Amino acid sequence: MPARGLTKVPKLSGAHLSNLHTFLVAARHLSFARAAQELCLTASAVSHRIARLEEELTLKLFHRLPRRVELTEDGERIFKVMQQTMDTLSEAVQERSAAQVEGQLCFYARPSVAQCWLVPRLSDFIARYPAIQLDVRVGNEPIDYRTRRIDLVLCYSNGEHPGLQSTRLMPERIAPVCSPEYARAHGLMGEPQRLPDCTVLHDVAAWDNVSFDAEWRLWQQATSNTVELPDRFMTFDRSDLSVLAAINHAGIAIGREQLVRQRVEAGELVLPFGGFIDAVGYGYYLVHPAHPTLPKRLQVLIDWLLEQAQR
Image (cartoon, rainbow, N blue to C red; front, side, top):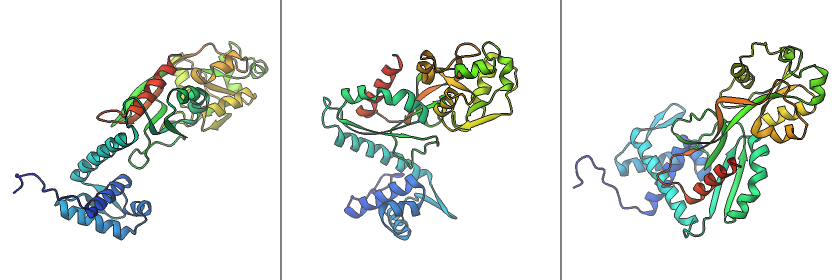
């Protein structure tokens, strides 16, 4: 007889393992239909496997709701345990010895910091860790770690990522930037009151759930600048594109020092209203799900990124 309050766990046959794997996929997607697509089954077959698993465990794993499913408290608990087990198994398979750090890592970054800061440095990482295969992806959409197998995210944010592990990589400073020609044509050097006569360039995806002019408002707040932003503007979903438009005389953009420093030093951009100021509360963060112990390959990537940020 099992002790009171404990579930009798069946011996794991091939069928039990198949049902557990089906549960893991369904729990990741929170959808029997999407799980069926991944597993090349019908949604009905997924539902039957889950029902058999629930019967075997004498636990209810999902709430069946109209057009969707949700994990029960027991289902969420078992899902987290299985995810940790899969991480441990992956670690054991991909890293055969402490001396050889190897395996795959999916690294997701915002497009601008990927192009201007990350990618130019990757040759050093490859030289140090040739047995780690980096899969670098870029995009602006918020990441659902349950449905997408992403190991690490590099983002521009305030560092608040509930339920996730967040490490500050480096701070950021910002300033309006434009081409020397644009500054001369609009008489901008040292004259912020002329801003209403300009075309303002906005990065509308600076961070998650952001207003389209958030970076300009952040600069105004930090500098106590009360000049109204002009009605004439252009929007982009990448900071590097708004800066490229500024380089080509389309208007004036907010430049992030980590991304535009070389452009300023080369004379392609000028700072018409003074130097860079702290982007108060914002910077670049490394974000990932919490692990009992970080996989070695993920730890060396994080350590390498922190080292690069000090250069």
